[in-house]
Length: 422
Image (tube, rainbow, N blue to C red; front, side, top):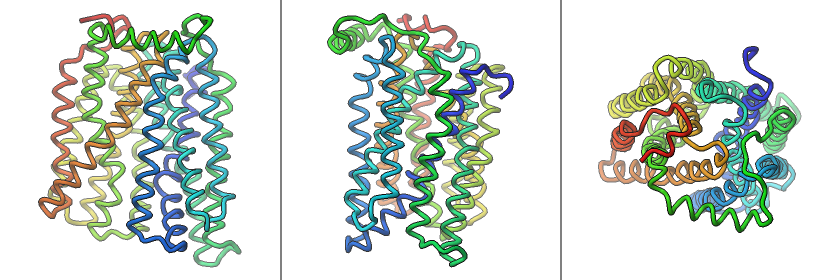
């Protein structure tokens, strides 16, 4: 970290800050808290699960629709930081609300959660786009990888504190109920997210921009229209987005459905949390390693390596039977999940024209969000037809093969001017 500039360090620390939300609110603690609240209110398990799915889908859809529009507006001077601050603040405020809303009000909890998703995802659009402002093209792989590594490490600290509070409350070691301990975890998440975002707010500025015009909103829609009208001029970029759509869908599906695989193997929830924690720890140094190797062997080469590792993961999952198998699978995932995400972000950042980075990262966000639809559906359908979860995971090979083949056709990202190639 000492070798990074102040803007680079500040940008990297936002990954350290917001990853606490990813782990505690979307993955580990709040889903269980919501399910318990809905159950106590008399909702059937299937009904609360359906509402949970609807909430995530609606919030994701809203962000995805707004992403390219807001991104295009944010390309004008002074707008990027304002949009980032707005969405970051929205996420922080409603994460705090999760702790103060009575758990008997499950519907209000779910609405607050939807706003946290919008705040988190919206801030990430502009956070990712700031990569072009804080470093050079030659350092993008390294900086993006450091961000993911810091995120993995940073998320584990509030995670350990929060889980410790909940376990101690369950065992009556401390005078707190499990509900209050969970609410404390939400406050810890908000404080962690807010505190470590301060360097980003102070030291990161929009360097590349378009000069303001009298009607920025109207002009933004005209620019979006022009982008689609001349889409052939952006062939390398959109070809990469198509490849990204497929392989990142496989990556995200394996991450989000990992607890389901473990449960089907009979692994206890305690062991699953331990494996989740170990995965976060192992993923950090491997993210940095991917960044360093990308500087030596090129980013595209390492993306292909990451896709190949995931093909091995899907193949191994087909034969998975024991807890040891699940540990091996988790460590294989940890070896590449951060690297492939970090290098994808950096590769895309090097392809886009810097003054239009927000607009194009809006499209990047759309491809990432909508990629979360195909993979789970493929796994679910295959598992249902074969009556075997392992076969469902194995079916994801299709996504990685398609993504890899398309990626091979994308020119290596060396200069932003490549976007003009046809």
